[in-house]
Image (tube, rainbow, N blue to C red):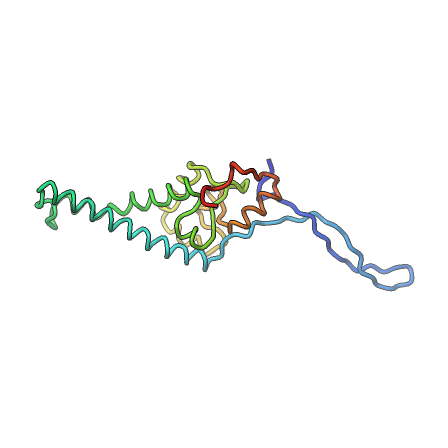
Length: 191
């Protein structure tokens, strides 16, 4: 099956050619050229990251409040003391929430809330919605030290290692059309 990496499209180029009288004319020539996907820019990537951070903090706040309500409702107010084990555990609650936020939103919906708001989606090398296993791999790769600095390039390590791409939804449809892989059942729930 053809992939995004080796996708080729027909392109007409013009080259100068001299005829037998020495007159230069432009001659059309059709070539097959590589067509790389139009991936997200660094600025947009940073923008939807900030939106995702806001949603992450909202979710973390809600989870913390629910835990606090449950603790108070059970009468275990001692657990809320600063030196308690519960407070120590709550200091690390962000790690699983971060993991679940990215894995579930990209694995089930094809994009995080920030990507959705900005009009982007995550696709695999065949221009289809990413599988849950690829979404998990993307999320695990985000824990690589200094991985966030890799996003200063065209694609972050979490994209390249999982063979995924973040593209506009219209680009996804165009790539599927070019690859001949579009079908109604492959559409995201959110498209």
